[in-house]
Amino acid sequence: MSRAGFGSNPSTEAALALAEALRARLKTERVGRALEVHPSVASTNDLARAAVGAAADVASLDGRTILALHQQRGRGRAGRPWVAPPGSSLLGSVILSAGSWPAAAVTATAALAVADAVAPLLSVPTTIKWPNDVLVEGRKVAGILIEACAGPGGAPAYVVGVGINLNQTPIDFPRDLRSTATSIAIERGMPVDLPECAALFLEALDRRAAQLRAGESAALADAFLDRLGLRHRPVIVVAGGRRYQGELSGLSFDQGVRLAGPAGLMTHPCESVTVLAPG
Image (cartoon, rainbow, N blue to C red):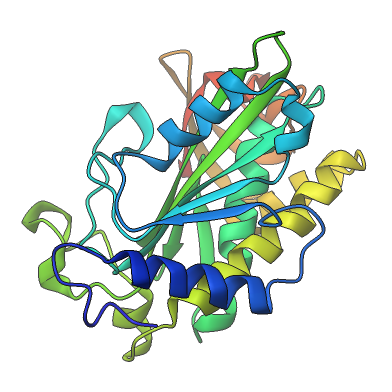
């Protein structure tokens, strides 16, 4: 299934076809077992948050997946708009009922799942830019928006919103993004199948979320550092509005980013780090 034939208004039939294709091929324990696919919505994250807010039992929503062929008001981090032509991208949200997980662990889990899904489709390395952009050859191919929410009784959950650029051409991106954004089709020179990529992502998120539930946060942090490609390298860290330089020596989702600098070893809480880049 490519973007061909979607036009400006994806049909109900196209959404049903994606749902049927996914149900036939998906091999997951939780993620995507409850699945809905819409032709067009304002925001899949908004639908997921509403589902959590109305749920008598938030835990029963764990893994529920909402996909759309088009989003009218998709958004990324800091409220920035996420714009994609109908049928060109994997757009969706997954509900994860939260344990005592810090938001940084959920962000890393989602970013790793996206990188895991994109990597088999390409012959070039897939990396992560702090905190959650997925890059191919230094250009952004996917973004993630994590939103914490709670059910009526206060039971916590996370909504994992994802946008993966699949079949955009260069002219599909706004002019100011054409040098920094890319799609899988651009990078490999041929279209990618939407159900294939959706299945790869949902299966990867299922595996990574299982690690999180099993308390394997150290293994997730190590995998995340590997995808950042900055371990034991000179980096620049901006945390709490201040700039630091040093060598990235480690990461703990509970404690933070460990930086070995001129003043010794410093640890910056993940939520305070806005920039972690080669230095």
